Length: 258
Image 1 (tube, rainbow, N blue to C red):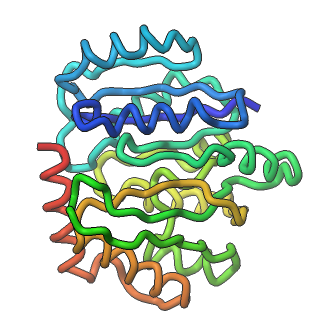
Image 2 (image 1 turned 45 degrees about the vertical axis):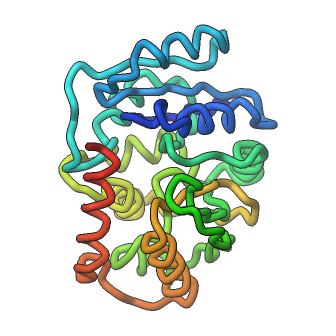
Image 3 (image 1 turned 180 degrees about the horizontal axis):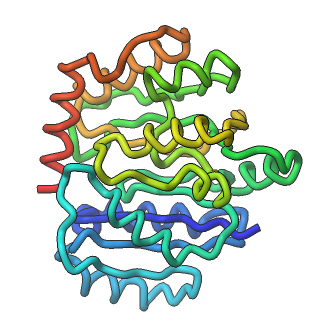
């Protein structure tokens, strides 16, 4: 089962983050994958091409959009563009500032092979403050994701606990759901909701460390910790009503894509 990994990037090559993301894919114990990197009109096009030429890995492809897609739905248009040429029956995203654990794809594929009815597999996440964000040694923490259940299915329509880079899902479920929606800032959350609404709601929690998620500031690190507490306790709350978090997320995205 080939896994197509779609990675959108803007300026992460200059910070070294994109190289970290690429290396995390190349370290996967599961070898049947392809990595499609799509630049959001990145100014580092020449450097990325030279780096990939040195790697000489035919499983990795790169293209750069001719125009910026902006921050209305950050990274979504590049991801949609990358998916157009994806060959795998399984799909996943990897934002260029995050990384996979070496066994992530193997664990996900194992779950799909064990139960072909599964539409989406997600693991656990190590949340770490990026070293560039602070000189302080801030403790990282592991977000042990909640198991999927009827209540989780219902709660997904109120708040989201699955980051874009965490799940591996079938191309069939993605297509039935209608794909990513570039008109919405939380395009990942909308995608999971559309999967559920169209009958592709067989999500599965595989208890393995899958993703290293980098927070970008002390405030971001704390907010993510609070989100973890709320989600793991199964609290019902409307994400869109948390205006202070929405504003902070907007500022964070503007800084990242400036």
